[in-house]
Amino acid sequence: MNNQPATFDRLSAFLGQPVRFQDFLLYSPQLNEIAEIGEMQYYVHYLLSTFDKEKILLDLFGMDEQAFSTLSSADDYEVLTESPRIASLLSEGISFFTKQEVRYQPSQRSFYIGDSLFISCNNYTAFAQLIKQLNGAPELQEKRPAAFKNEKAKQLFQKLRKMRKAASEKNEALELKDISSILCSSEGNGIHIHNVGCLTVYQIYEQFERMSLKHKRDTILPVWANGYLKEGESLPDIMSKTNL
Image (cartoon, rainbow, N blue to C red; front, side, top):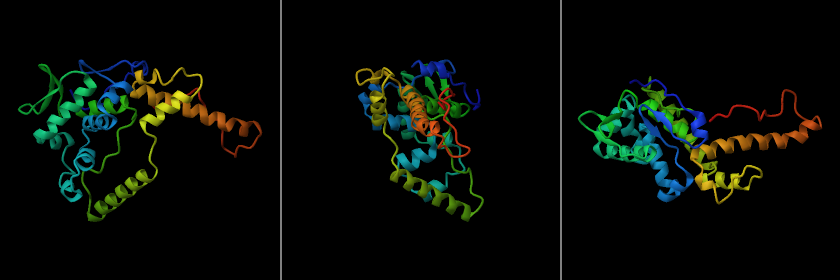
């Protein structure tokens, strides 16, 4: 096993079916399943399953930036599994997406399902990539540099990070509830308040992306028909591949 990208079965995810990782199945949770545990707990499970030490230690556990800087060059998996507490939480988060009990074996520095090896330092990034795709994030999140070349580079990175965080807070993205509500109010897709809970997170984001593209095209169409599009602009192609 290695950390080469795992194959993501877009068709299975689109149909609400699990995708395969090694000899096991990973599930995109349904909206009803998220509501049962609470949206915040879902995001905690998701964040832990990405093995992103920066987001886990800084955003989830509130570690001091200066303390974290000493770990910037260390491998994410090694740092996170060093702590028994975090390893236990990782197991719980991963279990939510496998629908099976996942246990961490400290002596092997690996996660197991039953007696079978599931995740180790050799394949954790491939696992994390599938988890992100199943939850509506097609690309791996941008990570900080493994090591800063100098103090100036470190300060610049920290400044950019604070600016991105401030911009994110100022322009808050649509929440899962809002996206689901928009899909329910859109005509012709068969999605309504009585069945939207059966959709997986992947299906919700995928359908929202497709609907957004169609909405943009329908909005621009009258402008295009009257010849008012700017030079170089064209109608969005709704017969195109989605990002998810």
